[in-house]
Each structure stands twice: as C-alpha cells, then as structure tokens.
Image (cartoon, rainbow, N blue to C red):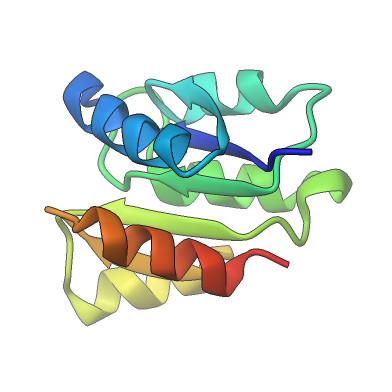
Length: 121
C-alpha cells in the first residue's frame, strides 16, 4: 500500500510542486491551504507523513503542528517543516512544537525525497 502524505502550504504553486514530486515517487497526496484546512484533511484519515509551511493565514505551521500532536492518532506522525525561514530560533520553536525535521525553500526534489525516506518508518 502506498504511503500517504499531507502537504499544507498557502502557496498553490508550492503545494503543486511538492505534490508532483511525491506523486512521481509513488505517494498518495492530500493537500491543505493552511493549518486549519490541514486539520480538516486529517479527520478520520491515516497519514504517514505531514509536510507543512510555517507562515500561513488562518493557522500557521507551529500552531498546526501543536494541534496535530494533540491528537493521539498523530502523536508520532513525522512532520517536516518546508519553509523560507532558516533562523535557529524558528527551528527551535518548530522542534518544541513537535516538528521532526526542517527543510528550507526553495527545495531540491531529490533532497526532499531523501529526507522523507529518513523519517518514514
């Protein structure tokens, strides 16, 4: 069975690029345009990995990760931050919220897939 990845980013073009990369590698992709939409996509679904942006309207990535971690079924789901932010303070904030890893945009598709391979069980 193919692994399912939830991609949450307010940039449609970024979501499309990530989704294309993942689909080409055989993943099933769910998408959300902000943290709130991401939480709605998770309802009742099993996902193997979540990739989220940091800066989004409605609900930012840090709040989204905290909400994901508060759900028992997603407590241990790997969460990667894919963002333009690279400051150490932001990375620490993401890590303390429950982020598994951090990738800075623009991303290299091969690098993204390598990171995903490392964090997926």
